Amino acid sequence: MVIVMKRGASASEISFVVSQVEAFGYRAHLSHGTERTIVGVVGDDRPLESHNFELLPGVEQVVRILQPFKLASRDFHPENTIVDVRGVQIGGQQIVIIAGPCSVESRSQLLETAWAVKEAGAMILRAGAFKPRSSPYSFQGLGEEALELLAEAREETGLPVITEVMSTEQVPLVSKYADILQIGTRNMQNFPLLQVVGRTRIPVMVKRGLMNTVQEWLLSADYVLSGGNRQVMLCERGIRTFETATRNTFDINAIPLVKGWTHLPVLGDPSHGTGKWDLVSAVGRACIAAGADGLMVEVHPDPAKALSDGAQSLKPERFAELVASLRKIAPAVGRTL
Ligand code: PEP
Ligand code: MN
Image (cartoon, rainbow, N blue to C red; front, side):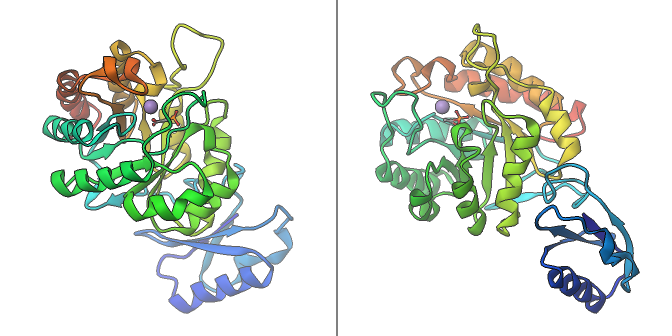
């Protein structure tokens, strides 16, 4: 449920509403829009009908949110959320390109890729330090050494960095280095992890679970938001279907659907979404045409030698071609790049 305050409601009217919400045992989350303030009422699902919040001074109306997710909903926060990452605005007018290798493999591999993607137009560097591999025998990532290399790459190139945090125990360490904490597909429903990153004030990217519905994905975003961390973005990365010709089935529908349901930025990851480098650019272009706020793309200087996800990694020159083509698509959908 949300309580929509009247335009120009006073601070004391708002705080009185908050105190009444809390007196009934619910939590109040405030959304200050340019027009009016909205008080999100969250708690358990007991009926709230009898509380007559609409009679309180300064209240315009009380609206029930029919979707099970609340804080991620556009009913609670009608305007787009813009997540600011060291001056890079995600969810605004500009399309944001995140790129880099699947994993940090070495200093030279990371720095070479970082400079190449920056040169091509990427604004944020991605690379995994802790890798969620399906096989325990596959490369697991360089851990803290990789985080230090990411910090060095940020220092040198000026690009903010995003990297995955796989467990609650890793949050303090990864938070020391990352500008965005990535929640991977396999952890989208790791609720304790979502709660811990929700208590940080570091931006969080929640990737869609490979077996999860859009509604479940947005409930996961609500886990982070309800901890008080408002800097949340979503990333569609493909789901598992009966189709085996591609690694995953990229759910292009989810982009415009989720943009309508939530105020949070929505990005697309055509690398994991397809698993094949020669499909990545076409699906990446489709994401931007469909209204995504940005892309996350895997790039490797020598994909054949990559320790993870080489088959879906673009060479730097192909990535540069992709960005050049996105510069033509962005204005066609009212965006800049
Ligand atoms: C990744 O971004 O490298 C990754 C492991 O992504 P996902 O969790 O979507 O598989
Ligand atoms: Mn990967």
